[in-house]
Amino acid sequence: MTEKRKHLPAVLFTAAFFALCVFFSLGMLLPGAADAADSGDMPRLLVDGKISETYRDDFEEWFSKHFAYRDILVDAFSLLKEKVFHTGNDQVIVGRDGFLFFAETLPDYTGSDPMTDGELIAAADALKNLSDYAEEHGAEFLFLCAPNKNTIYPEKMPLTVASRGEASSNLDRLLPLLDERGVNCLDVRPALLAAKEERLVYHKRDSHWNNEGARIAVKAVLEAADIPLDLIGTPLTEVTHDFRGDLDSLLYPKTPRYDDEFVLEPEAHYRTVAGSSSLMSLDIQTISDLDRIPVEQLLMFRDSFGSALIPYFASVSGSARFHRALPYRIDLLEETASTASPRLVVIEIAERNLKNLIGSDARIAG
Image 1: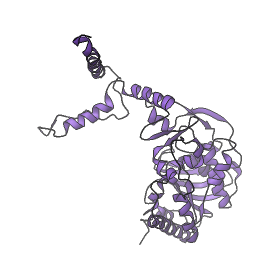
Image 2 (image 1 turned 135 degrees about the vertical axis):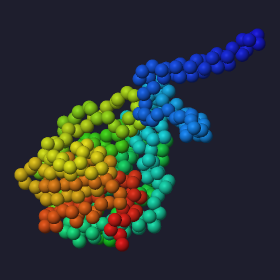
Image 3 (image 1 turned 180 degrees about the horizontal axis):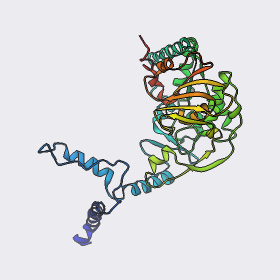
Image 4 (image 1 turned 30 degrees about the vertical axis):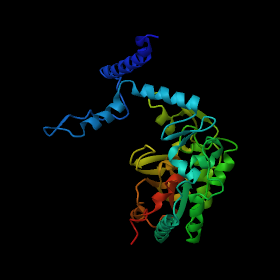
């Protein structure tokens, strides 16, 4: 083999590498080719008349998000990893039978980073303070933890990930502490586990429960509060295929992929009177259009899992307010008429976020 032929593979690889670099760099001149979810501006070389000391790092980070056809390449690479190697990325775990899981729930699933006893006590004490405050203002209090998706569907997790086995979860350890303190709490895991035998209660391609899972959770809350279930007693059956999951979006930024969703029954039985109508808004106020209202006033503190609960709770509540701020604005009870009855305060939080309960009573803690 001649010397030239010996080095030909290296030369071809180098030429291909630089050709790709030029292609993607020049492609940025084409309209739309460099569009990205992160629309930040290109960093400036000169800042206040001086060369920026961080320009190189800033430009490298910006370019990694804006080079031409980035999202298309990310989609293609993610498709290869999911379908061939059954892996996701640092935020998404590819499970079995088309299920995706949020990587942040992995410590709960494996038991690798449990809350300390002190953290659990602090969380329980915070909920106790919030519960006492609600009762002092004439409201019934209920704590609801939305289980992680892999808590309800552990059999869909990849076989390469070992579960915590018989070890207790953070939620398992928290509930007895709340019971000791007399805090009204609801464990919806048994209801969801039973219901999943008949239909999906979480999205396959999203980290949250679907409308049917949310209905089951609300039904359990209202049963615990001894409130009539008229609108939400019947399982949802009509299904559409138009839901884009958050985990899918993290894998495939360019090409939308859609998941099944149960059609929401009580959607038209309430209207928004303050705040945005988006279920992801930080503060939403609603009134019900029903003639008979089982809950006069509802104050609910929630995270992203609570979005699917809003249409149900809003439909059965004369007036309702859904808030996402931490520490919880439990003091909003003072802004509503104390004569309304029944009044209900619900705190909903995802299992993966239980540590956020620590200090959640800061607005009232003395």
